[in-house]
Length: 144
Image (cartoon, rainbow, N blue to C red; front, top):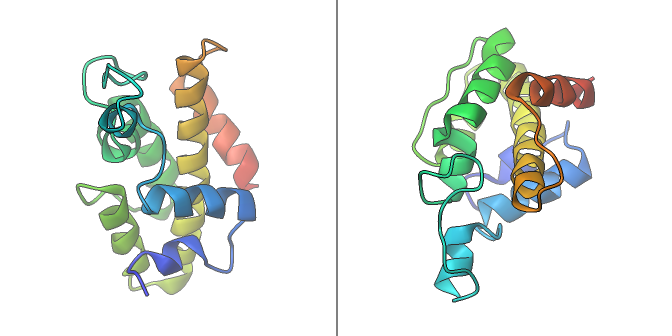
């Protein structure tokens, strides 16, 4: 069993979000860095910030836009962003002493991961751009 198993397949999961998180935890999202490795794309420049290599960790944790959204999303639970990779962050959430808080935070993380990836794809395919407040509002709507 992998360390992030409970972060994906917990009792509050929604299958669409859980599946996306599962793909992400396996490192199978089609980031530009991954596509570049297979010689499909030449550029590795992030669609979101246009100044860094596009990796899972960059998209979900290091990019200021997604970091702002995640911080505001987890503020109600009084949880801060910890870890240098998405899997490490999930491991941190799994290890929280309050198991109810941990399960809710993992649910939030799944929905966040899905929405940030959708925003990334919207920018990649020129079909619109949400601001961070609008994205956060959409995530909160899905949480409800």
